[in-house]
Image (cartoon, rainbow, N blue to C red; front, side):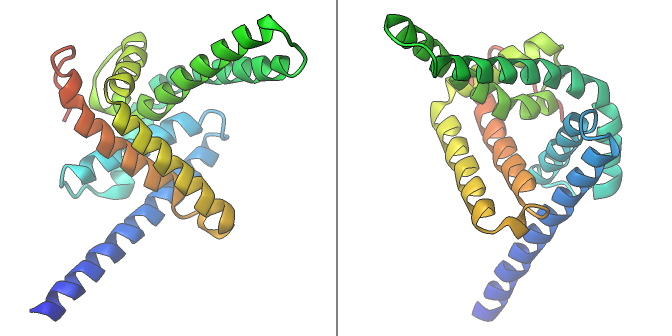
Length: 209
């Protein structure tokens, strides 16, 4: 019985690793197929969509589900990501500006930059889970993603730690980049968002199954 239990655990771990690697490769391929710029957002939405099904205990045909989600979210995911790209550039400009100013204005700008960066980070890590979980217009998707992140600070902190850990690992072992980082983070982010949605359910409609 003990051996069977150990073998079952090993088998489940290997299945999980294989799934993560397969999804990560699909994400890379579909991102490239959209010319990176147009492919990044729908490929990310697709990987979160498949993760959502897996976490729910479903066993979808992976490639078909990924492809269907990629097409389904192609336009909306890109429309969601474009403002984030603009804001990220504004934050970078603000950061560079901080290096050439001093005095009281420096501290005012630093305070603004830190708070804006924090909100940007929260929005970024919850945006795609919110897109998959809730059938909302674009502006409400942004608001709900921010609300979830701010309402559940421990979940947000845990996701930040997960992201930092993944980045540290791939910096140490760059060969893992094609196989795991995006899939692992999307799994953690979707799991946290599913856990956190009960906190916001009184303010939102039921999540999409």
